[in-house]
Length: 170
Image 1 (cartoon, helix red, strand yellow):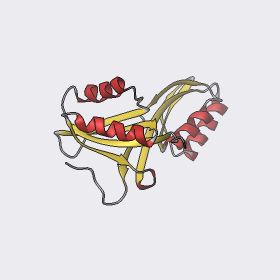
Image 2 (image 1 turned 45 degrees about the vertical axis):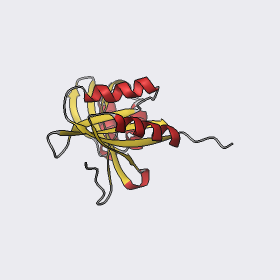
Image 3 (image 1 turned 45 degrees about the horizontal axis):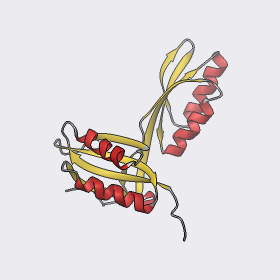
Image 4 (image 1 turned 90 degrees about the vertical axis):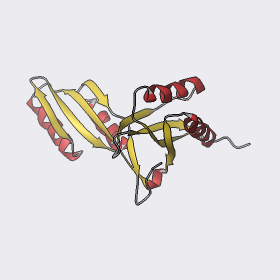
């Protein structure tokens, strides 16, 4: 019997924008033993609704179970799987990097420009850089930064939309 391959899946969840909904969703994952790789939440074009983008690693069966369980929650309006080839996904990272001297600072600014990032803050011994892009781009910048010495990282996780005219609505 062929074993299912674990893949990263992005799930869009339209929910009521009120207190406790994020807790309900996270608690569902906890109870069922599913791990959330990343989750982003924000208001939508309708002030009474919020959109969650949840990324999970799992096989098709696991993702199917997650979707079924999410649809049972009272405050969930709509659940949709985002197809990898038909979505736009972005992450943001803020990364504080050690800059030992002016050469390190200059090199880091060049790398930041190559990655189309931005210098957000400069201190005598460090810089904060912002990079936005797909997870591979963010991972690549983090790896490149390790040689300078990473002091701190804050990363959002993926947020995504379907390409074209397809939208998630009630």
